[in-house]
Amino acid sequence: MKLAVLPGDGIGPEIVAQAVKVLNVLKSEGVAIEMETAPIGGAGYDAAGDPLPEATLKLAREADAVLLGAVGGPQYDALDRPLRPERGLLRIRKELNLFANLRPALLYPELAGASSLKPEVVSGLDIMIVRELTGDVYFGQPRGIEIRNGERVGFNTMLYSESEVRRVAHVAFGIAMKRSKKLCSVEKANVLECSELWKTVMIEVSKDYPEVELSHMYVDNAAMQMIKWPKQFDTMVTGNIFGDILSDAASMLSGSIGMLPSASLDEHNKGMYEPIHGSAPDIAGKNLANPLATILSVAMMYRYTFADIATADRIENAVKKVIAQGYRTGDIWTEGTHKVSCSEMGDAVVKAM
Ligand code: NAD
Image 1: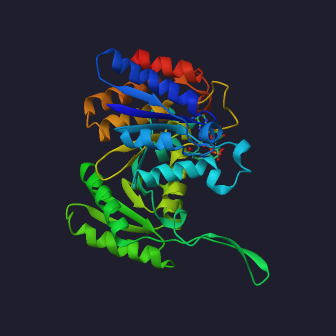
Image 2 (image 1 turned 30 degrees about the horizontal axis):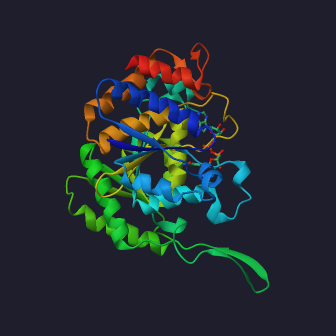
Image 3 (image 1 turned 90 degrees about the vertical axis):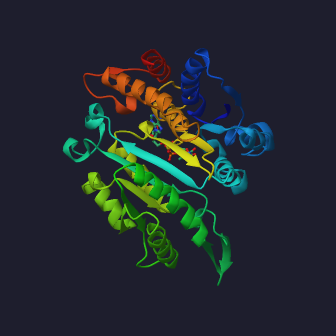
């Protein structure tokens, strides 16, 4: 297995180092894993003047899977847009055609107290959000800021082709089939033509999956329902911008953004695996970050790209065990639990494995 390891910026290198410890356990047991590290984001800009250096993209293309930390930082905010770290991330997703982003939001029972919602609202929560990742208003053309009628206007284009909606629909229905066979498609078809097409195509694709119960919800209502009674959801599918926002909201249901992994897949299940959070500049370099989302991203890599369910389960069970043992980084710490650093949490997971 050939892995491209792209730590990125801020807490990226700290959390990726813990995930690499987990991979090294597997390697020491004889699993053939080849890891090569390359810069991306601000680190890419610093090293090669490009947030996605050519050599990094080449490495990612040749790898079976990519493990990514996070990108971005205030020191890069004044750069021209194409040079900003986040642009490197958008480009690698597009270049590798990673159109389906899987974001599970799962609540470990012991962390019910760390959620900002009441324990009875979130306990037992297990949602899978499938977010389209390479289209929508983030990529649609035209886009820009220009002078019209003597003042500045900013504009972006929300755009989906039916083939883009269809392929992510198939991924979402496939996942719903393996879960409770309930799929909720989230859009804003009451006001947006782009969403109207989304909904139409979802209904068309649903004919191929008669066992799956498809429902539809406007995104504003979905945001409200997710806070009111999140357990009504099982698998959700939505476009790029709505999914970006809803999945961050879902992260708080599960205690901390530091707990949530993600997978971004192409049609051959090649994937890029990363935590859903950003580079957390406020705690970077302090050994305080929660590495569990990154470690759980490695578990997703085994589940989806390498189809090695036993190893995926083993890593997830090790995480469950350290949570049950009371280990907590600052973001999930509550009275009476054992506060640990980022690297100590990585060591605890390795021990639990
Ligand atoms: P963020 O996710 O980096 O941080 C939000 C808050 O959550 C901060 O208080 C941070 O300390 C905390 N947090 C995040 N991850 C944590 C972890 N693993 N453990 C403990 N606490 C954690 O979002 P932001 O502050 O809006 O953005 C910071 C930078 O990250 C920006 O440059 C932004 O563009 C970038 N960003 C990158 C990605 C990505 O690489 N996928 C995603 C979102 C934001």
